[in-house]
Length: 180
Image 1 (cartoon, rainbow, N blue to C red):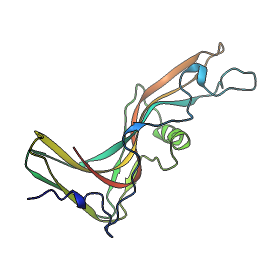
Image 2: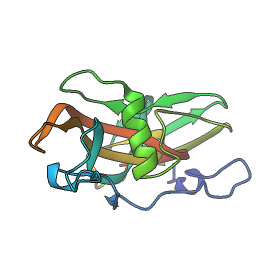
Image 3: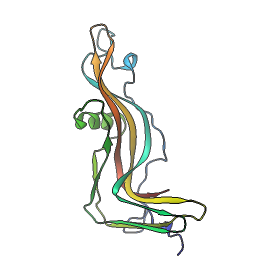
Image 4: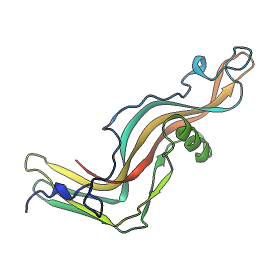
């Protein structure tokens, strides 16, 4: 069987599905560390609770239920019906409402960032794991962003006090099929 990668990332009309840039650092206007938190009128960083984002990278956010694995020479296939939904992931040091983190990511990174994405089309793709590669995977997901987040506020001495922190990996664009 031959590599049919031309089918990957094609919408129903055969046109490519819009993509985010390749994995790369993404500049954000998010506070990062106590000296960089928003300033209040007195010149001291804002003293209300806020979310700080750092180490933001464009990345593939895959759906674990729509990921297949295989060894060298195997042709992998994945398909999804219109209406299928997949979600991003979070890690926490202490539980915090995900909506606070998502809202901060929408404001700082991209308005298209969300916790979940739903396919609006039926799509699929195949990919043959190259002979020079021991094993590989093929997955449905979307381009999105991974980042570290920190939630906290300033105490009376303008010192940042973190109450929760973690990581997030959230979808941002339309369905995308990736392989490795």
